[in-house]
Amino acid sequence: MENEKIIRTTIHAGQQPTEAQIKEIELAASMPIVPDEDAPELTLEQYAEMAEIAKKRRSKK
View (cartoon, rainbow, N blue to C red):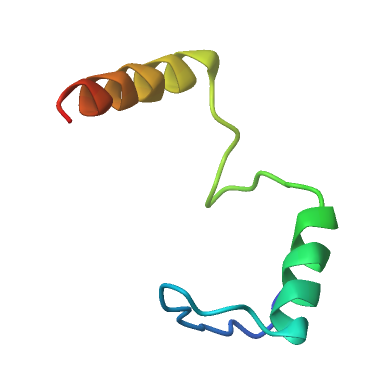
């Protein structure tokens, strides 16, 4: 991972992604999710807490 570059791209409303962007998304979607010390796997309690927060935010709209 240390040799990977971060590429930031802004896609505006109505703009279609390029073929290269589509391929990059497909590649990323095929990669496994690997928790590490910077992004550890969430506990069931954390998922429940986030679900409750999301529910409250949706009810405010």
